[in-house]
Length: 352
Image (cartoon, rainbow, N blue to C red; front, side, top):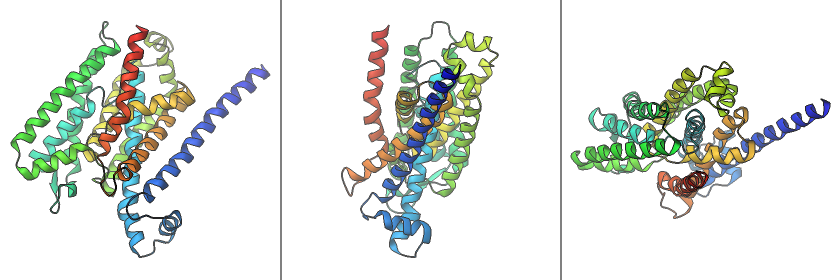
């Protein structure tokens, strides 16, 4: 017994060390994200601006541009990764995420409706890059409604006896096509200014969210994080199968419904303020499983940290690959996620 207890403590200790290393890496990635760019800021200048807030150009850049951007990347990465991690558990589908199941595309269509027809966003200045969401409540509500339509369909499929992970993914592809087509129709009928702003918004960008939007995303994301972490042991039971979880007293039906609604809410709010940023929710949980396994006591916070790190690194890449041009963050995350998605598809087909 003593040897088993010691082995278990070592097992738990390794998991906590992994999470600590991920947290340190997150701070390093955030610092790199703040320093990256055409201004060429050094670490000492960043630290001085953070603690002294000296009135100079560097301080203005850091507090008004770089820190909000890094904060947006962090909280969006956490939200999308959490949604993907929990979806993969409750749907018993390793390929599940907000982007692969069409939730993000549905939310994107809903947000476009709110922006175009209900004056949820405007173009500020003479360039489409200055597009901003002026009514976050309207945009978030419509984005959530669009994301929930997809969620309801996926939930209905997941309850079917003949539904397989491949079936749900194919349904997600079909729903993505429908919502993408509807978004294109909206773009076809709007004027040139709204069209340009809406197209820019759909690229995915971390510059649209201000401190008010960051606060909204943070509150919703961390409320979902607390709920998911509270049910971490129930998610562990779900890994053994629905029947096993029910035999252990887990309220499976209620847990699945509530978790999917929260996942849709988090993904929809992220889409509402930053546009479509795909595959973070797919990549981060699979990477962290390599280090912490399928124990949701560690996988939930690990996925959150991994998602934030990945999006911060993608943000650095978007500003560093072709300076001074800032590449669309959604395109870069798709380049990262698409190969992994194909790998999972081939792996699943070979297993069958």
